[in-house]
Length: 394
Image 1: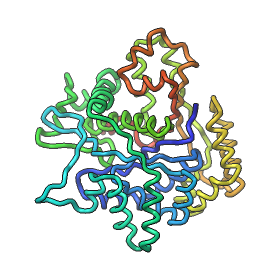
Image 2: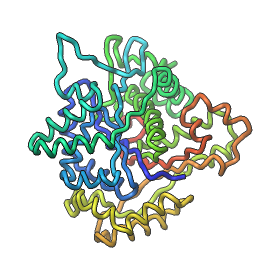
Image 3: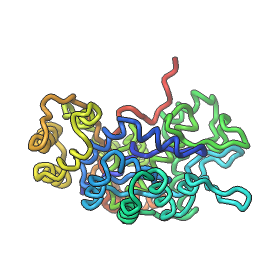
Image 4: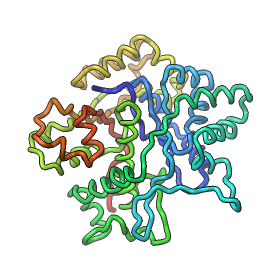
């Protein structure tokens, strides 16, 4: 069953061990972030945003204005999915790891470090008090209380992380012919994913906002997709907006179970939705504000569109585009907007394909397939800019 919530990985502010204030300010200044948020708000009742430090909260307040932000929270438009620790790659055979830093008596945290590595309430308070310091104390207090209600902290232990994120990600690469060829292009011969030479024994790497630049970044992004699947399941089995080729990652998880070609072929359907009015460009071009987007999404036509999208079992591209235009037309004039194409991967519900006997037992060690056999069949909106791929060789 389609979800009312989308977990949007393109709205993640990617942090490293440097000053998180810079990363948050740079993200807040990006027009494509506002554009993506506008698109997500029109498609889903709730947008779940993974975050390390809750820095997205002051950004949303600035983008929408405090009043529209609080109104959106009241309508459950946002969920903030707190991730503890930074996903990284550590040298000397450690490979994929969670990086955590503790405050010491000799070296106390700056406020932004406490926001990244501290407890959630303190992180939210530091973000609001420091990045919204021009607002009144009463308003900041109100924003803190209401924003905390939208926070979710999915818990997992180290055993889960090692099995379903680390080992699963290694297997996703090692048993995917296209993927392993990408690694061998950089490191010819046998590839040891725990000892990639581009990270020295004493160093660590975190996937930055620059995206995928080499094999280490690619492995980190694969691991991030597996983490996104876990987070999406934790927030009510949400759909996802994620990196391109993530659908291939899911298909190969099933292929490793040696299912029949017909079953594998029916597992994921890839659609292209053409000629969709680009409300994000309208926001970027200042034809609409995000405050107006919040108003548009509350109109009955927009609400009816989201209900239709949540209940229609099979998405017909032309029908979706027509319904989307109708949802916008009551409060906006989409006729003159730029058009865009959206790539949508739909995983087929387990009961709708011929599942081999014994498959349910064989997928118990794979988080996504275990959830899929229990009824979770998400839709994946695929990023047209970022792919699970290496930069093209010149």
